[in-house]
Length: 219
Image 1 (cartoon, rainbow, N blue to C red):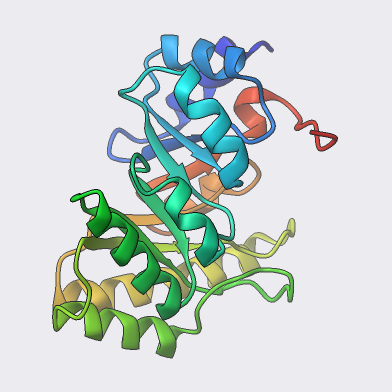
Image 2 (tube, rainbow, N blue to C red; image 1 turned 30 degrees about the horizontal axis):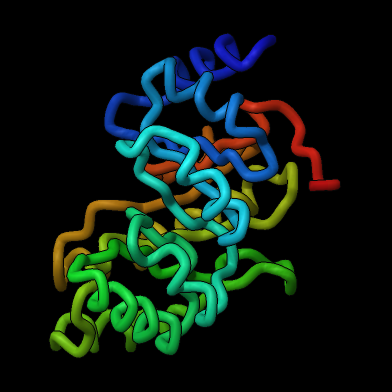
């Protein structure tokens, strides 16, 4: 299938209330423009350098999401235009985003990334750390940011029961946080596992290769 068919196929599979983040990392500006022309407005990138190169070349109404691990010293390069940072995995990073957003007199939306996978390579906060950051946020410790939800990456496995357990762990934490303050976004599920994530309550999924095809990691 081509990009248009892939995109339409994914959209058909998603309930209306589920947000699609088209993950465009390593894919060229032309491919992103093709998906934009189909009506997509939310795109996710992993790397700051790649995002800063693509951003000036594409329509200004794109909502850019950073979904990869973000170093504090890179925040300044995207603070002026990024819509949402999904991969917030430390209080230090929250404070840096807050500081850089203030310089541009804007508010940046954040998702707290919680570690739900068994894989050591995955980043994320422990639930207790996420609770502590969220508590400080509710006490107005951070300016110029808005925590809008949680994000998680499941283990890379075909075991649907394990995926379900990991996604439900995040869903339960999301529900707990929503008791304190209503949150908009539960971001979980990627190209291989998003149907299970949606079953478990995801209302935002991050889909790349199932739309754009396999990534070129030589870039």
